[in-house]
Amino acid sequence: MEKTHLTLLLLSILVSSLLPHSLKAATGRCNPSDYKVLLKIKQALGNPYHLASWVPNTDCCDWYSLQCNDTTNRVVELTIFSGQISGQIPSEVGDLPYLDNLTFRKLSNITGPIPQSITKLKRLRFLRLSWLNLTGPVPDFISELSNLIFLELNFNKFTGPIPSSFSKFTKLGALRLDRNQLSGSIPESFGHFKGSVPDLYLSHNQLTGPIPKSFANMAFSTIDLSRNKLTGDASMLFIPNGSSVIIDISRNMLAFDFSKVKKLSMQYLDMNHNMIYGSIPKAIVDDANLQFFNASYNRLCGVIPTGGNMNRFDYSSYIHNKCLCGPPLAACK
Image 1 (tube, rainbow, N blue to C red):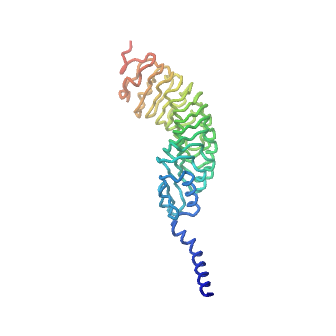
Image 2 (spheres, rainbow, N blue to C red):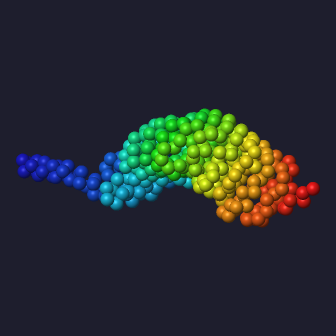
Image 3 (cartoon, helix red, strand yellow):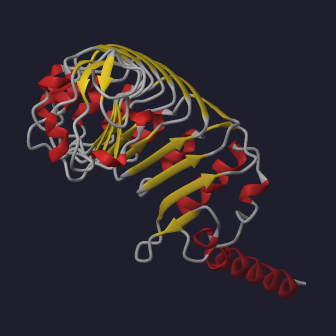
């Protein structure tokens, strides 16, 4: 009897000592902390079919919708998109400290605010939370993510003002806040980005007031302010010797003398449906890179310049102005 008890005792000790090793073997390369967090995220999202590969006791580095670093085996990318997933962005995403890329995209049943826990992601460079149904204000705390180089919050239902603190980003290459319900004015601080100048997308909102004069200090490669309620002058966007490629200020209430723009150098200029007056400057002929130009539905007058790339543009680029004339419109009288 004593021998039997001793055998059972030894077996229990052996099994218990092997359990951690067997769990580690089952989860493979996956970091144990990341593994636990990922399962909490799956549970918080209602265990959706989209995350069916996230099976307990398997290697999380082999699961869909994420990526591990080959050296550290830590989860560095979480990309969840185009699935039947409901709920809010789980606060547990902030417990994946090595994340470089966090993406929730094209998930129309994801609602609520952005969790403040993402401020713990100090290594994060790409934040894409787009084509969701996120609501509330765009949180100021996002500016604490100082390593961001791409911030995409478009196609949501954010309301309220744009945080002026976003000008603190020094590495940002693109800022997408378009297609929301943002209101108020464009922050003056956006003319004072300290590091790289980001491509700026603010279109399809309810922004009002003038374009900040400080924008004259910024050589935006791409700036899209279309379909807002902006007023006043936009001439500061046409910087002499600037490097702008795309400028879209269409469908606002902007009013300035276009003839005073001395130099144009860009590939795309759309300023239709405003109250822009004066004439089309002859300098536009010297812009050899211009591929698209639309000045329709304004208050422009005078002869349409010819030469350069101007023969690319048909009457639709000029219609419904005060008194523009010459090809491709009617002859001047």
